[in-house]
Image (tube, rainbow, N blue to C red):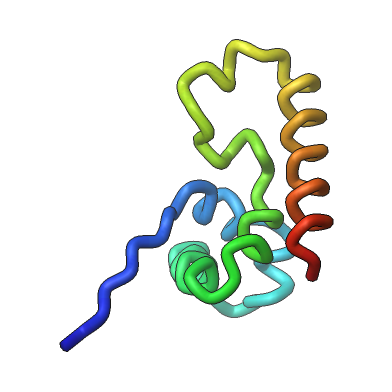
Length: 88
């Protein structure tokens, strides 16, 4: 039997065009980089998700009702807390 795992692709295309992604995969097109990111999420989700700007994660329809500054501050703090709790 073949195992199938569902992995969120939220924000992968955003990360795939960043400077960090380009330096990690200099010869690859953005679509291939996004595919690698999605695959890595299965292996180590937190490590991949922290690379994505919080606004690009698609966290809910009301996230755009907050000011960008407040949303970014709160999401960044939550990310730091999550990493601190899980460890790296």
